Image (cartoon, rainbow, N blue to C red; front, side, top):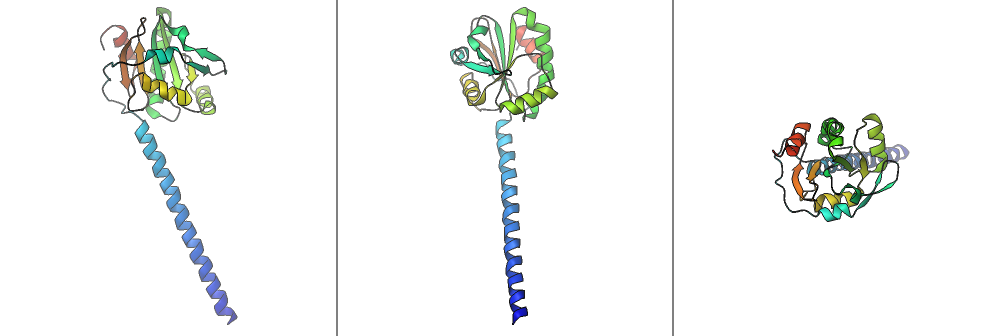
Length: 195
């Protein structure tokens, strides 16, 4: 009797272990699928067309205050009167990362022409700081958090995708919006008036 009880306990334990392993595997797979779906939903196509400039609320941008990498609050009103390129990005976004060297070079080449480029990270500060230590850029980066998402929407990012780039002229008008990866050449064409 004792050996049949031992076998029964062993079978029950094995069944519980198998069920638990199956449940854990399904949950892990489900979590991975959810993460992939979220990433796919938030990443804009890398070769999609530019978005035609539509009305956007630049007042929301110029009335915002965001922190820089050193934790200093930056009032974005200080950028009024310049041509302003705002790039919304995240460290987990491959097209965002791919466009950063071109954006950095563009800023270095055009900063003296009253052109300001800002990166607004829709990401957590520790991830951004760690990423930028390994991949520094020449232009200022600010932490957007959820406020950054709201600003992106106010500036015309109706899909909420990343990367999203907006060009605002010296008069505070949106002259260009692009959902997806942009390039040095695309920004050069915008400055030349040939979007």
